[in-house]
Length: 386
Image (cartoon, rainbow, N blue to C red; front, side, top):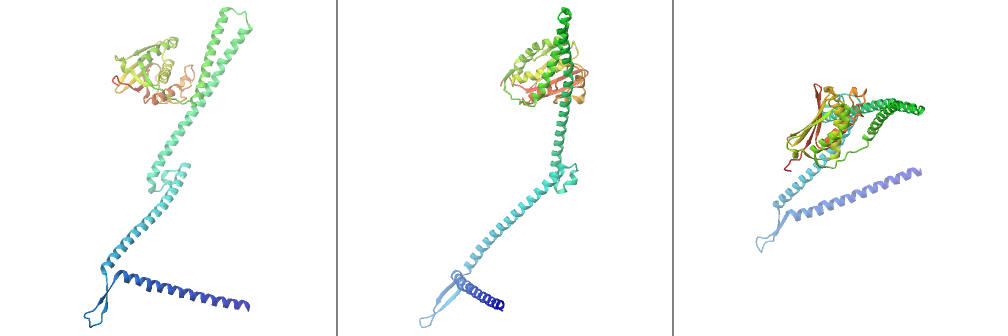
């Protein structure tokens, strides 16, 4: 019973409150529309004029609408509405565009991730409307795969080289230990035989030193960063001086060097790092001597080629196959016959030479045909008038 009474009173209270709110809204709207609104319209657009035809007659108010003000106000209102509409439309377009862009980016990211992680054809992942993106992504993936394959091949060559060197270390080390043991066990050995054993031991020790240096060069290559300290360098003087320094190595192989320089010696000036450039020529000459036939000439020919200088190192030796001419400048690459001889180094000399030449803004390449191999270096020259 009490609950029914409470519910009845609650309903009555709600009805009273509702009626009160409706009355207040009516008063507010009536005051606003019939009061303030009408007063504003009357003041803004209505003209009142007292009209009286004669003094004996009563006058009256003449009311008229001021249409010029109505037109002006409507024009302003229309302009404000158009501006508001344009702003709202622009906001809607920007909001929709931003959402659409985010959606496209998320979708493109999902498809790119799917394409990069799986071996699928690009047309199976990207719809036709993503043709531009799919072409670029396919190119990037192909470049990454080529780079990855290059790194794998380089790592494989490095591992093979280390394996060869580790195996080659055993032979000279065994010989050194063996001959030194013989010399220690037989102190009264004849001088001729002792001198022979000492010579063989020294030769094997030098071979062991070269192998250890190759190991050190392999380790050092990935840690060093080549920085150039440029100055004006006289290539003619550098090359002539280098031929003198190579005399012992040339005599050992029965080779000789001939340098051909242009008549104008001043044109052989370059702006370069003298020490790094000497390393380039040193590596190329070592390679030329190592792979030249005995008792043959190595020609160093210098020429002007427009605004560049061309230095060619030409030697007679076994022809390098055409498909290996570019590979010889890659890290840890050695020709097949270098693995079974003492001529093969760590496979870094020409790779370092190419890097130094490229840092100087030059180019290096090789040509080999009819048992004549040429290594050609082109560098920017310093003209005499400069």
